[in-house]
Length: 131
Image (cartoon, rainbow, N blue to C red):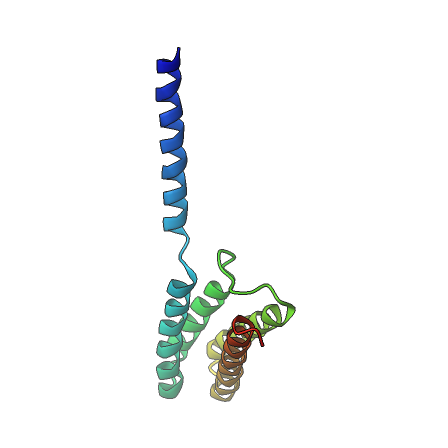
């Protein structure tokens, strides 16, 4: 009877390990998500400067999508959640202004989004250092 239980037990453990590995492979870590956000932000600045409204809208939409990812969050403080919300609102506004082909609106939304990034990163660094 012990021999019959052992293969079943080993199979169950392997199944759990495989599921855990697959789940973690599908869930990017914070560093990967931040690099992806940076890539879209770099593309975005070029598109804003060149007045490429289609690329602005596309990059802004990707930043909104990444900001809505629930698989990561460096902090769960009210300040962090506020910064994250401000970022999302600014990115959505940027996308809307780009679709409306309003360069002044795009410029303002881009500045608001960038400011929210700087403020959020400042907050996270301070929280990690105990400030």
